[in-house]
Amino acid sequence: MSGKKRVFQLLFFALVTGITLYVVFSGQDLSALIQGIRRLDPVSLILAVALGVLFVSMEGIMIWHLLRSMNGKSSLRQCICYSFIGFFYSGITPSATGGQPMQLYYMCKDGNKASDSSLVLMTVAAFYKFVLVLIGIVTALLWGRRIREYLGTYEPVFWLGLFLNSALVAMIVCLMVMPRIMEKIAFGVLDLVYRVKNRKKAGRESLPARKPDSGKEKPAEADMGDKKEKVSRFIRSYKESADYLKKNKGILFRILFLTFLQRGMVFFVTALIYKGYGLSGNSAWHIMALQASVYIAVDMLPVPGSQGITEMMYTTVMLPVFGKAYLMPSMIVTRAVNFYILLIISLIIVLGYHFVIDQKKSICYNK
Image (cartoon, rainbow, N blue to C red; front, side, top):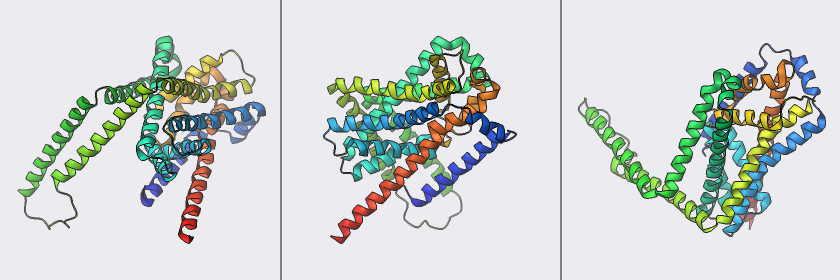
């Protein structure tokens, strides 16, 4: 990732964070919010933070488990660091697109094969999406009539999120099960784009002559060939992931179980905060289902960390649960525990990893 791109992403993240904070705290009595936060049982808060840290660490455990089966070189500690690195870059980039590339970079830096690392990350991502969709479908089937009651005007966002995640899971399954057909479809789309570009180019050439280009631009045919090669490698990686899981069915079920456990942890944070306020009348399963519906709705939205929309949905969905008195304090604590505190911890780990890599380079150079 280039320095300019990284700075732009951080500035964009800061802008979104600023807007979110303004929207959340605008018109609020800050002293009342602080008092509301202080009413939370400290033990519940500590347990919630620990659960949030364990939620991110669980991905590292899965990465380590898969890497170990491929004779990978990273330790469990390093794999947990990869998960926090992924959380940080996913949190500051739209649609969480920056996490996996940075994880792959550090995994390769630590001596793991790029092919094995890619397979591991794709497997973890595929299970994450599959489990999220499965939870969404079960929630919709069991709570179909009550979704409208709790989500209110955000109900379409939930169905959109479930649809987008389901479509992505369907595409991943197709890539794994019928890679050749998917490759033909992808090549067909690329060829269509190529023909459209050629028509536009022919139209431009009929206009008065312009200054000649610098010669740096690739010929269209070569550029298209490169793109098709990248598509082929991408599809092959999913096929390799499917072949690996077929040969290691025991690992498949273990990763599936760990992913369900991981998802449950982050949903349980809200229930833990609910109990920490001494509230009653709603079961933990009820609160976890509501929190899951919020996650599913915002997961695919192109906003860093799903900021803004998550907070606004929370205040609508959780109002009948926490009531007006505890709604805003619970939202602040929940988001701090499952996103902002974890983002700060992740940033510290990212900086630490950069320092370690720089130290290694310095030692190698001095030798």
